[in-house]
Image 1 (spheres, rainbow, N blue to C red):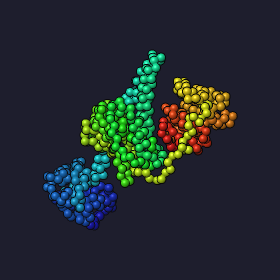
Image 2 (image 1 turned 90 degrees about the vertical axis):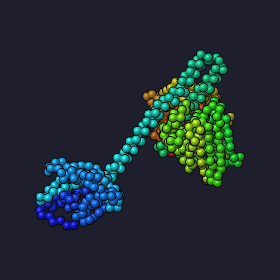
Image 3 (image 1 turned 30 degrees about the vertical axis):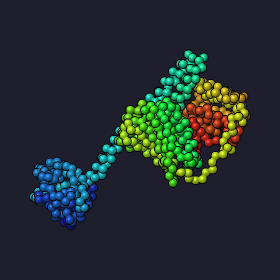
Image 4 (image 1 turned 135 degrees about the vertical axis):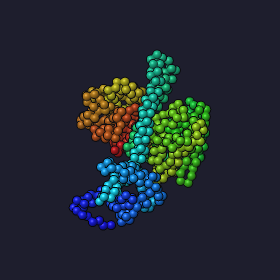
Length: 536
């Protein structure tokens, strides 16, 4: 369709309309299109020539249904515009156009009356709202997700405080009992058991949080080897035993007699099974059974852990593996946990190329957690005795320098190591540590990083820079355990990086490895009983 432009002013106006990002049409008093730009034609799937001269009403209705002007919001707006006096604001609305292929095109629409050469008409402008509506929908969904996430985080923080206070209360009471009944061997044995059990609970909570952080940051790696499934389940059942014993939950095992081997990280899979078994014990009534059933397939093994406890509501099944989700609160569980355990378990199983799914017939009808894992892949030589550290009996007494500004922590660890046959000295700051290192000539220095004045990094550099100090084995013992902290300790000259609280068995294992140095032949780095990746 060609237009005859009468003046430069008309030509400028024409090109302004053609360059507009909005669709623009002009219609006469009968609704016939006298002009439209390419944007308007493209928006509804026509060529400009097809629309100019046509009655616009016939082309703009979705689904091919012709609406009367009274039924069509756009036509009604156009009619309103034609009733406006010149110079009045444009009539505006939102509506739907029909694309030539029949699909609906949502638009924002405005119209204003014009009179050209004494003839009344209207000019319309409309913008495609499809993207805006899509973005608004996505924004609403994202806002809802953020609100739900924020709610879960708020509940998580409150729960974390609650879960950490729970073990602190009996520990404080136990300490008071120890002060009043120091000579009563029976009472002392009872409170030691209480403190050990509650401390293990706190360590488990902190470890779960650290593991989730590593997984989220992509820093967790698996130490895979050929392992027997029965051994992993045995360790997990032993770890969950106290909970099941307290709740008097009978355990039903259905495990094939033939050995089943996996190519897996035994520590991490033990963590998965222990987590699920603990949940089963926590959410089951006293005396109700828990079952572990193992089924072998051609290439996979399925481990079904079932309980007859509180069950899971159907609407909760899809989100019990979400971070910070605590189904226990919804189902009345007395010990709902932090809401990270199942998320951690699923992600660890998926790192083993397996699947973890939950099922339940509803509240009060128990739960099933089915873990599917691939059978042993690459042929990996089994561990032999020569891979293990020397026994404690074959080890001479070790000279240990403890450096920690926490007086109680240093004194208690020193006493524990002395009971194990080692020789210890204690320093509470950097200068004292360097003085004792020169006099005592320790085999190993267990060195806190957050010392007053001269920090642990500086102490390590001074030891490494002075050959007269004997170059002992340096192990950082600290509450800081991020990859950046490990990098800094390695650069400062540390041989090992342990995070508090460190189990005495980990220190004993480290001490047992000392005769087998250099560091390349040492045992894998450990943190609270788990091997860790120090490559980063």
